[in-house]
Amino acid sequence: MAEKDITEKILMLYADVFADCINVLQYNGEQRLTEENTKPAPTESFYKGQKAHNQLCDASRYLLDDKNIIAQYIIENAIRLSERQILRKVSYEGGAYRQQLESSMPVHAVICIVIAWTGKTNRIPLSLRRLLGKNGVPARELEQVDDAKLTVYHMHSLPPEVRKRFVSDMGFVVDYLNEGNFEGRKNQKIIHLEALCDMMEALTGDTRFTEQVAKLLEKEQKEGHIMMCEYINALEARGEAAGAKKGEAKLSSLLQQLYALGRDDDAKLAVQDLDARARLYKEFSIPNYIYENKQDNAGEHA
Image 1 (cartoon, rainbow, N blue to C red):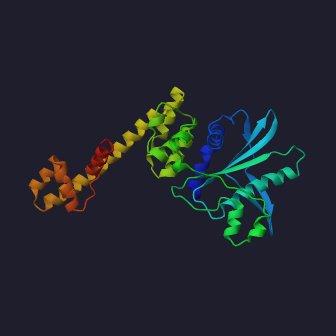
Image 2: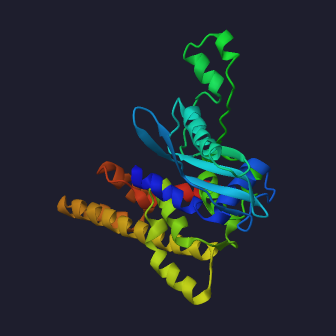
Image 3: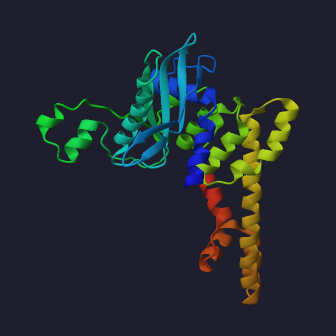
C-alpha cells in the first residue's frame, strides 16, 4: 500500500500536472497556475508534542507574482478517507502558517485540497465544526470555533465537463477511471510517459500499463513524443496476446479431458462451434474467457 501511495504521487510532482489539477478543480479550468509562475514548496513541516515530529504532505507549490509568493497550494492524495481527514488538512495548513510566523517575508495564503483515489464514496465530516459536533462538542462551544472546511475531489466520479478541462497527462488518468478507455484523448501527446504508466498500474492493478514502457520510451527518444493512440495500440496488442494465450490454455485443457473420456466427437465440436465450446467449458467448470469476451464486446456495441 505504501508503494502504491508513493507511485500515485510521482505524476503529481510535475509542475504542469500539479498546476493542471489546481486549475481544473479549483478554478474551473482557468490557467491560474502555470509551470512558469509556480515553484516547489516544502512538503515537510514540524510540530511539537511530547517530542518533535515532522509531517509530510504529498505535493506543494508556491504561486508567484513576479518574485513574491502569494499562495502555497497543497495537494493531498488519499487512497482512503478517514473520519478525521479535516484535522490532517488543518495540520498541513497550520504547519505552513507556522513557518511564516518566524519569517520576515510577507505572509501568504495556504490552500489545501484532497484528491481521493478510492472508488468508494465516504461520508466523512467536511468541516471542523461538523467533526467536533459529531464527537459531542456542545453547540455553544462550537460557535466559538473558527471553522475549517474540507474540499475532496473524487477522481472516479468527475463529470465529463470537468474532465475535459484537463490538458496535462492527468486527463488520461481521469478519463480512464471514469470511462475505462483513453479514446477521447487518443490524439493528445503523453508528456510524462513512465510516471503515467506507473500511476495507471498502481490505480488499476493492470500490469499492461507498464509492460510496454521500455519500447515506448525508446520510440519517444527517437521521435520526440508519444501520442496516446500509440499507447492504446500497445495496450490492445498486449491484451489480445494475453487473451489468446489464456484461450489456448483453456481449450487445450478441455480437449485433453474430452479425449481422455473418449468423447472425440465433442472435442471436434468444441474446436468448430463457439456455443458448443461454451457449454463444454461450463460442464467441466473451465472459465470460458474467449466466449465471454466476445459476448461482452457484442453487448458493448449493441
